[in-house]
Structures are given as C-alpha cells and as structure tokens.
Image (tube, rainbow, N blue to C red; front, side, top):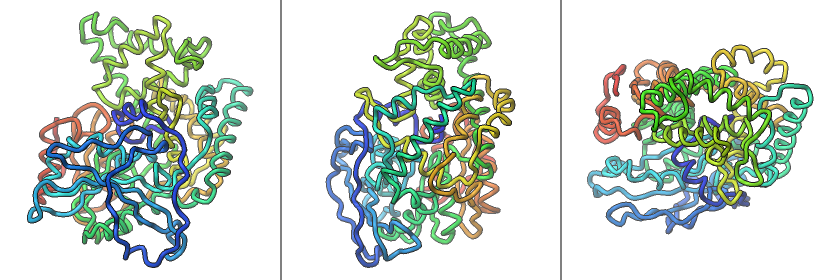
Length: 514
C-alpha cells in the first residue's frame, strides 16, 4: 500500500496475469535539438517485461490500430543538449476525420509507476467518444516500462521483501523491516543510479511539454487520473500558457506532505471498507457470508488480520498469505466497486483457510504475475515518490503518528504509518514537501472528486481546484465508489468531461453528479 495512488485497479488486475520483470532501456544518445525530432510510428510490439508483458494491443472497433514510437528527451533537463533517453509513446488516430480533429489527447493513468503504453489500450473503448476529435495518446513516464525503467530487486528478492511484516511490533521485527527497506533502496542505486536523480515529476512535466511540441500541438490536451492529476498540476504550474483543455480525475491533494497524505489514505481506505461492509450486509446471506451486519463484517476482517499476524495461511505455494499481504489485497479490491464481490469471495475463502485469492489481489497491487515475475511498478513508484518528497521519516516519527493512524483506520492505519519509512536512506534528495500546482493564467481545468475514493480521498479535489488558482480549477463532485469517476459510467460525469474536451463547454464549478 505505499503504492496505493496509482494506475486503475482493473489495469493492475489485468497486468497481474501478464509477465513482468526488468528491462535495460535504450539511452545514451546525444543528438541535436530534441524539439526538431520526428516520431517514427510503427506497429506496437508486445509489452516488455517491465511493462507487464503480454501480447500486442488489439485494434479498436473499425480496425483502428495502435501505433508506438520512441521520443528522445534529455536525461537531465538542466542539460537539454546532453545525453538523451527514450520515452515510449502509444497512440490511436482520431476516428472523426481531419476537419474535426482537435489534436492529441494525452493520458497519464497514475501510479506513479504505471505504464500508459499498456493501460491505454486496455481502456481504449471507454474513450471512443473522445477519439472522435482526438488522437488518443499515452506514454511510459521516465523510469517506467520502456522509458529507462528503474531496476531494483530481482523477483525472488522482491517476493521475500513483500513477505516481511509491514507492521512490526517489536525491536527485532522493526530491525528486519528497516533492513529490507535498506536492501531495496541500495539495489535501486546499484542498478539504476544514473537515472534516479532524473525521475521527478517536474522532469516528467518537461517531457510532456516536449511531447506536445513533437506531436505538433500548440496546446497540451490532457486527461490525468490519480497521480496523473499531480503530474498535470505540475505541468500547469510550469507551463500555464501551454495548457489546452485538461481534466483531472481521482485527484491527488497537492497541499499535503507525505505524512498528511498517508493519513488521508488511511481515512479514505477505511471509509471505502465501511461502505463495502454496509453494502455486503444489505445483501442476502448467500451473497454476503462474511458477517451478519456491517460491524460484524469489519470485526471479522480485523480478527483475520490479527490471526494472520501469528499464523499465515497457505497462499500460492511456497508463499503464504501474511497479514501484510492480506491488508494489501483488501485495499486493492477497494479500488473499484466491481471488485467487491471478489473481495467477499476472497474473505470467505480465507475464513475457511484458503489465502490464494487475497494473495492474488495483493500481487495485483504490486505488479506481480502468476508466474512470479514483476513489472517495474514497485521500483518506479518508490523512485518517483522518493525523488519528489523531501521528508525522510524515522521510526520515532512512525511511533509518533501511529495513534492517529490507528484512529483513522483500525485496518489500514498501522500499515500506512510504517510505509512512511519507504524513502529513509534513499540515495537522492527529495524535491519538496508537496508539489506546486499554482497555475495563474491557465485555462479552466476540470477537477473531479469521488466521495468514495479510497486512494485519493475526495477532499483533495477541492484543495487541488483552489491551489490551481481562481478561474482555473473547476470542481465537480461524483457521489460514488471506487478510484475515479469517468470510468464509472456515470452519464453526468461523462457529459461534463466530453462536453469540455470536445466542445469547450465549461461546466459550472460545484456541479454534483451521481
């Protein structure tokens, strides 16, 4: 769950079934002005191990083929004429014909660490209305997938790390937890030390601006989801005059430091779990065999986690379902209401001594497939977050905040408190306490908050809208469940987004949907 603000849950469950691992990226070129390059679009290859593996993306309806290209960008944006790296792009062309085409609509689905090159095709049909006037484009941000991927631990060592107790209770467990984090961070430095100083969100925002130019657009038309809203906000701050029509969905709170953000997630995941329990308890017993009422559902979950602390269950041999893995699996299922029946099934099986489904959900959280390989999601997420976030927390800090975290969430509080140590000893200094997204002079940006969002709690949308500045942030509320609003299928949300992106109609700030 240090990786909770990330690409959409369905994509992770899909990629959990695909191959993963590490990839040596192309880079090291030094060639003239990167702004003068021409992209060479070709048929997309099968996803790399670092992207999650699998097969080449299938065409959209009407035989609309996906195309891929590699954009050169400076490794170090302070030396724009120096060494370059490759940024992997994917697109499908507009369906509406040349006269109606507005430009390219660039997606970032979150993470940080999610591959846009694999995620966009998985959800392409959801954006068919937008494709009538845009080429749909996404990319692997630097450090991710095929774009100079950060490499850290091997799959077997990552398995061992993720089996460690994420909520240590005594000095020995704390020492083991800290040693695991230290080993992981040292492996990242050893295997990717050259790229680690250059994967900040500000670097990715500058890549976005180069992408806009190379794609031939005067303005950046953008759809950011989860961490993609933070990237979009940083872009708007750096390049307010280059912003076109933009939408932020499942919004990161840009005003919080990592401690505040983790505490907010504790509240958000607990709120989503409360809603799951209420929904389950409202159903007939055969559809909700995991509790007699909402309080009983939650009580049994708490007891399960306590039991797993002492006696892990058989999972996927030889791995066990530990308390840590179960907590991550429960969190993963809360990303979408569509997964609530799977969570019910997983819990019911666990109560009968079978931990396989909860472990599968936990693997999806971490980008692990059923063959035991990993995408580079965990590595990239850590590298980007630790490069962005200035605070470096200690065990004393964790002990200080644990009472508040436990009060916020009896289930997720301890885990999220301890995850604050993830960047301790990271080899690159963090940039700031929180991102700067103030964007005076930018055009309206739609900012959509979901009241039931576990990973990016609803309150962050209003704070993002305010931080963008007067006349820029246009707040929309979706009263629903899950991580994000547009892909919920809610007509009100989709009409507001489509009306703005396609026709330039700005909805009333404060609009409520759902």
